[in-house]
Image 1 (cartoon, rainbow, N blue to C red):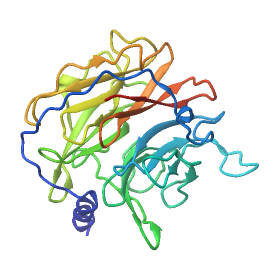
Image 2 (cartoon, rainbow, N blue to C red):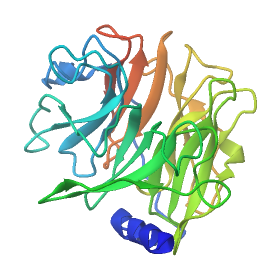
Image 3 (cartoon, one colour):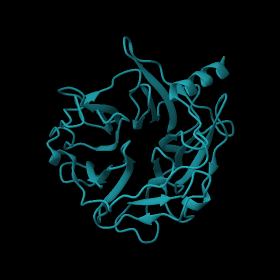
Length: 307
């Protein structure tokens, strides 16, 4: 039964093997980052609460985020929930975020949403169930057009899958080359490292640390991979960081090559504050991330663009 559920999960992900070689693309440098509302988007994308973990859906019509803002007037809970802001076309601004509700959100922290093609959604939750491996575990769900979000599927525990006794964060599924799930693993006492779990016929296999992306003494977390598998952004406090955590980038010539040593994105993106959970849009021209503290709240969503 479990194997069938995991196999179904791979179908949800829309797994497609795309060869080991991809063509490199050239982009301009990232422009100066600004709060996401500055582009005409809803002023409710950032609030006086904690707002972060931003990521666009592949079609560019939705932005998912995590926030501990009040869910309704008089709400006193402070756990993180996943919210989504939508727009009718890519030429229009994003509207106000809406809470996804149950069964995606719980009374524990639910965060690091990652929308997938085919209405799928990866996310991290600290909910406690009989299947829990540790602190924050990776789950997979999908939206049924008629019935809404289905009950989330908990991904297997180490050594059989990506979840462990530590905190998993920033799941990023990439189909290019050998399909795989990238994520970070760590805790408040164990510095984070970047891991990868290969997609298999039964789901996701044992996770392995990505040596070229990790700095032993640093907190390397929340990776996000460009759709062609040739560029990866992450948050790290390694030597050279401007603030508490900065956004760094790594590249590779083909999906068969190792990742390069990460490079700091510089002052256009990073500041003396802490930058976290970066994500690339489907066309790789928009970079979203969280910054703490923000000008409005304990953490705000920022955006940078490139050509």
